[in-house]
Length: 405
Image (cartoon, rainbow, N blue to C red; front, side):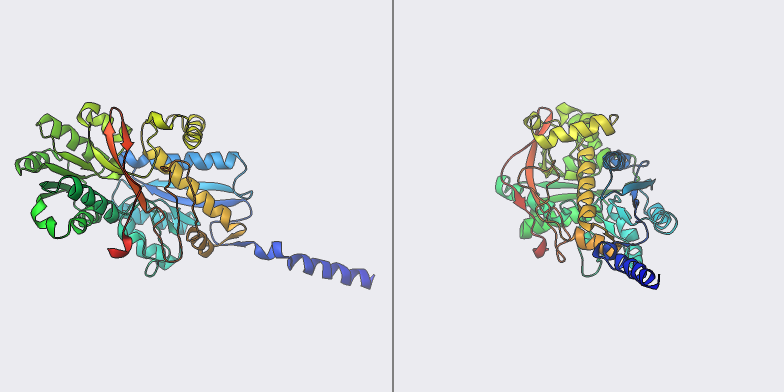
């Protein structure tokens, strides 16, 4: 009996020492059956058009759960509204981390809003992952190792527009409308850096607006009066639509450069009037679901099938569900790479180990790559022009010059 008792004890010890058992590691927010993911979105307020991104994330995680989850674990997605107000973002982040015990916060939206919680998230060592802003500050692994961007950064995008203007409109007079915060200023810095010494002579007007303003109509009238024949439109969807509409109303027809965060047919172009948006230029990195050239594309077909089944009420003409779907797929890839080591540290390690990942809805040739020193997952874009009812990509794939900023 003593022999069998010792054998049993040895067997139990061996089981606990097996590699499979040893590999299973969990931090708060993860377990054998669940992964808790937090999110903060402006479902109300001046940037509520972006709320559909949060709804798309939730819908995609419903799909993942219906198909068995990630390595057998279901995603519990907890998303809160901040009304696009940074103090509310702080409140919701604390709620997610301290009350809801999330493993990470995914794709919280807004530059000032992510800035407001960046130090808190890093002090708590909770991943602030794939933030929904292209502000350059969110790719700084040395100082903020728990914060990572996702979309192309605003300064690189601004440089791309500058290159386009210098090449095609070297004598252009540029009028700028920008949101008066870090988001707007980041885009403006990129343009100025790209123009170099010519910025002082080419930019004839820089007019800010506040996110709480009712309209930007007066700024558009002033920009026309400045004599600008190139319009650099750095606005969120509500104000982008107003600007396009007002420019048409007063007969101002400049070369129109629209920042990518508002290059949505459903959320911006249609409300502004399709006829008013002809010829608008932007920088693209995702497929426009309204563009017929993608109708037989496997990735686009998969996106439409997802929308039909899991988010049928979503706007299939908007780029924002494409964005949310792509971010969700990127997180799923990271969590799959984590395997049974679901610690916050390993989440960041795997997020910084993406190699040529394709979301299915990025433009051909645009892939996600990260490393321990590169927290900018997408660094490529392509110019696009609004023609008919869609944004048509043209020209080469362009790479951002982050290192020189």
